[in-house]
Picture 1 (cartoon, rainbow, N blue to C red):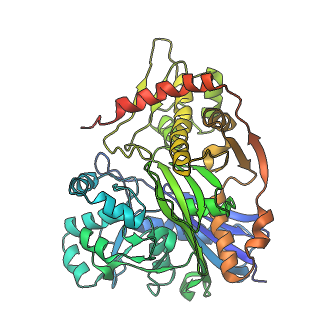
Picture 2: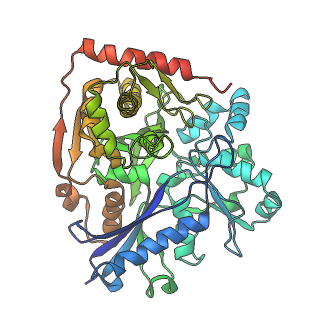
Length: 495
């Protein structure tokens, strides 16, 4: 019986495939990490072939490691790291360069040039985004101007651009479908989130031919069909969505005012704003959540560039511990941060600062400082950054956010979640299912193929634990004031 969903979850550090049954229980999953490429300071790349190969390998493995037949799969859902930019030859299917990852800062000087020319308000009015190297437009511009022959081929209509969803679908369909969904399109800095179309004036500003761009489709519905050579049969693709929007949907934050925070490589806080675009006065992003049928759901977002990645850095580069989970044991042993404040601006600062020239710094080191204190400070830095975003978002809403649903790898850390609740004075809700990114696109794919609707999904979110704030205003201020001071001292360091 065709009642199972294959979710493809292509992330920043790994590719995952999960088979969900009709009740969204995981039947099988597979994960493969891939190499990160750092050509220069602030540059981050991926090999596009590896993105496809690891994703396809995990998709094959879930069937090899389970009793599920490919014939039981009703449809495929695809969720992906956003903004990461790939340009390839339409004829050969070969990329002209490595993928430029969302974390990459090489186009920051170009952004500064555009800002000095007064272009930021114009860009923000159409896209809801701040002018930053984070987004795809300046990355495409860089590729066309720095790769031999790229500009000429693009002008001749010989090249295709895509974020990672588009690249996977191109490969799954053997080049028959060149599409992206509205959520991913809204992260390119080329898409008008009000009129729902590629914006000609933005294309002119960034000198990007429209022929390069994919067709924009809904996040749910019959969107494409895999080539029969991939899995042996054709399978419909009925869900496509960027990873953070997928986590918002997976947390069933389907009503305006509901918010989630994903603690992954970065931290991403999103708030459902319903059918209204809320323009931020505090450097939050207005973005598209998803589109089902004729209905568009919008969101406010704050992006923290280095979240769980700071724990990976302590593990891999500093060799403080062997497993990331050990960080909680070390931090718990410290008791407190020992006066240490760690600003993990390893790739600059994201929301609400948007400071590409900030760099990481550790303040308050004394002779008595231990690696337990440093680990505790690193964990707390994740919460401080999320709190900065929460405060800014609350100012835009003109009301506090009283409840936050959480997910992602670091959300398994109860010490971190309690600290988040304390400093943010917000209830933190931890669901039983923390990997909500793949779950969100499975929900959308299931709607797209007709197995479920919004009403039948309502009971699919369940609460494991609530973290309630328990610190006084005075205690919170004593914790957050030194953090604010530390942030100010890191800004502009690279300059």
